[in-house]
Image 1 (cartoon, rainbow, N blue to C red):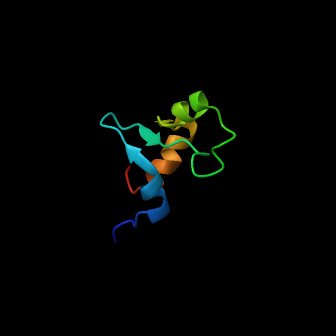
Image 2 (image 1 turned 45 degrees about the vertical axis):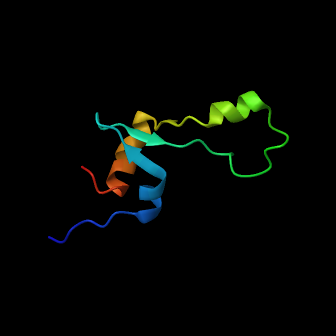
Length: 65
């Protein structure tokens, strides 16, 4: 069996934690930020976890599992 190739777009967007959960960055932080309040922008700095319903699909894209 050949190795499963990693989907490179997913590899750039998602990271695995040590416990096996999937981390992602938050969207809407690239441009048009002047209309956004400072608190909103500050909250977007921190990533969050992918929902358990989607994490199996993302792990398959990353070549894990």
